[in-house]
Length: 103
Image (tube, rainbow, N blue to C red; front, side, top):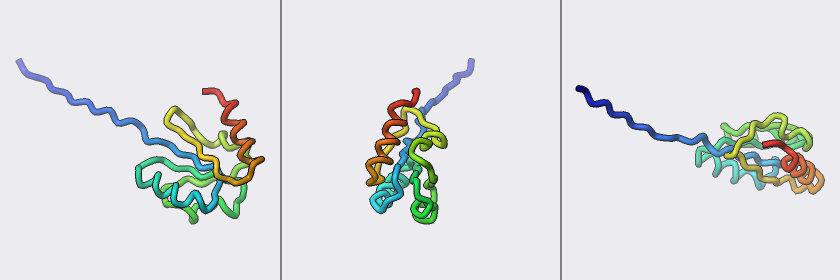
């Protein structure tokens, strides 16, 4: 008797972009990602640099040792990492943790 019409629109979750390194180079990248509606996180081992007031209002900021970066971040297939610390040993430890994680 009646006609039922349904419309379905798939809205994928936003891209999650994790910047490892609270360096000046991260400022414009975080800003661009925020404008795209992406979730942003900045992680650095230095509390003096990893401060929320230095970054866009929606950006999550964390202080972490490189081996523990993944402990506080939920990742999925829409999560990307950008290594920006300019500290080879820190970046290498984060890269090792990323390569060793289970998907």
